[in-house]
Image 1: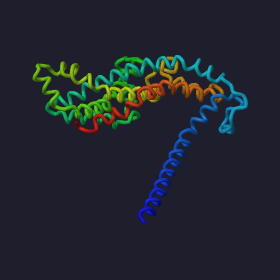
Image 2: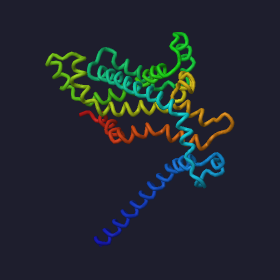
Image 3: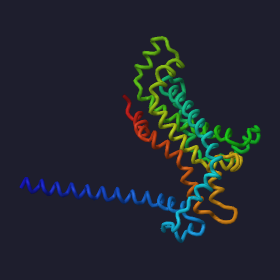
Image 4: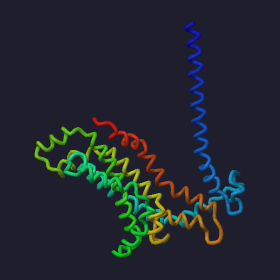
Length: 284
């Protein structure tokens, strides 16, 4: 009887494993279908690239779309890098400082301040575009990458503060008290004790902010100053809407080119992303 139950259990286990693998395979197929369409279309010439031939392989593999897309996007790619790198670093540093003060160097009303900062996460960008436009024009800030850096830094503070505050809450209070006993003030404690152990959260925040700023279109449309001075998303939008008709092949090539930097960031730092998120989930 026991052997029979064991065989039944093993059969049930194998069946459940097969179902899980089948569901995973199905999920992979659904994820890769758009990738297949983008890659295949990027190698089709203007005559072949159309909605009616979406699923067909190109009769002639043409790399001209890639050259055309690169020529039109390379300026925007450079400007996007000039945008996302300082935006990610500055907002990460500000969020780290805020998180440290709100978690380990508390002051009266710290919870109220933290709540007000978090409130910024729930304000839709669309709701503040007109007031922001009036503010930018009234102070004569101008349009371009420098304005977009300011926008992404300011709007990145709520999420970066939340991530760092949760991470610093997991740091033992005894460590901070020990630094105080040794005579270290707030800044010395932050730079000498807290900052060196903040790498996991910095990885999470930088990936988050890099991706958010790189993929942004709304801020770029309002404050980027046009495709000639704005980030790659504006240039990609112009590429997708040709002067006469939509160039599907060049659009797909441009989309793949524009996605390479974020793909590189995730490949290099992705394995630290989940670990960084989980680092502050349990108070140690």
